[in-house]
Amino acid sequence: MSVSRAIVLLSGGLDSATTLAIARSEGFVCRTLAVRYGQRHFAELEAARRVSRSLGAFEHRQMTVELAGIGGSALTDRNLAVPDSPTTGVPAAGIPITYVPARNTMLLSLALGWAEVARATDIFVGVNAIDYSGYPDCRPEFIAAFQSMAALATRAGVEGAPVRIRAPLQQMTKAQIIQTGVMLGVDYASTVSCYQATADGKACGRCDSCRLRKEGFAAAGVPDPTRYV
Amino acid sequence: MSVSRAIVLLSGGLDSATTLAIARSEGFVCRTLAVRYGQRHFAELEAARRVSRSLGAFEHRQMTVELAGIGGSALTDRNLAVPDSPTTGVPAAGIPITYVPARNTMLLSLALGWAEVARATDIFVGVNAIDYSGYPDCRPEFIAAFQSMAALATRAGVEGAPVRIRAPLQQMTKAQIIQTGVMLGVDYASTVSCYQATADGKACGRCDSCRLRKEGFAAAGVPDPTRYV
Image (cartoon, each protein chain N blue to C red):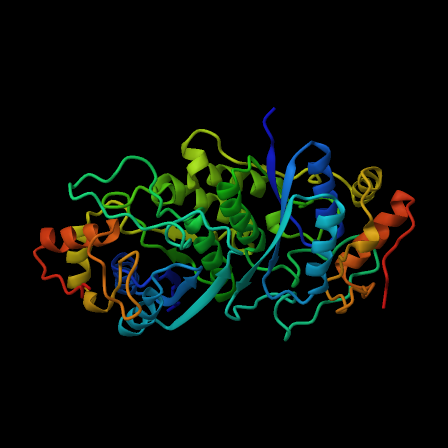
């Protein structure tokens, strides 16, 4: 029987942990990849390592990208503040200041390089276009376009077996994601979602990401294990 | 009059130097980007800095990507040797061992991030599909697919002004590239193309890249300024 190999992008947050659990439940041997690109929420990288181990990934690697100070996002530029989320259920219109320019393109391209070397057939990414912050590179049409590009970019594509980009959370609500993860044994206490988590992983409870997560646990009827400051 | 801004990927080699000269000749204010990703030919990074300055770029930045040892290429993995080029004019069939998995996808994604922040309308890359080493991510169809993906990935794309990916050397022979560069004032003595250049930028004269460069100068009728070991 042949083994199916996957690369799973892991941020340390709730969505990517659930994505790893889904990939494992489909029988994939998973290599997990966390990328340090200057984000404020550094505690996520430790969380990624814990999540990888606890969900039985084959291997975890952390890559580092030094963006030479191009900034442009509240997540990487300390001169820009992470805004509080509006207390209503409706996110602010447009693309928020926490958007990191071309982040998912960069993360997926690193995963693509590793997929080629490890001969992985699938790359899993936890993007979601329902309960999300409105980033352009979380939309289904972006994922599809990246897959088409990857087929032309790589040895695997030339040889007729292009990598698949899998986004299993794409059409799920935050509550559905949490329910799926609980069913698959994800321990959400070890995940960190906050855009400005403290060094020991405590969440602010006020940013977009915290709000979406908090509302998700409430809607799912699952106790929220998040440690807030 | 509005200013046109471009990001130009600069490796320090002959092709990307010519590409910068072309972008400058079209009137672009150019920000140049060199990426250190563990390549052997480290002297190229110094060359990139020199080339940027001598061709009047507005700003040069160097980003670093630590690929966490995924290897898979003779250019980044010291356990793999850079092969001598066949002495005939025909490159070896297939994708060579010097291919770096998903390299151009990664380089372009970093350029894309900077383009968003700097509000650049064009990204220039010196890929070429005539006198080249046979890498899949140098082909016109790859460049077109990256541009389509980028339009969906970015704020600029959402706002109706997607970035253009420009590959002006795409259909030129190495001789044509050199003739164009000479016309535009490129000093090829300061460029480094060799896959295994010495620390002070001397070329091996035997790898694919050296062979293509050497034959290019001969065909262009231009004296070869390369310093060989």
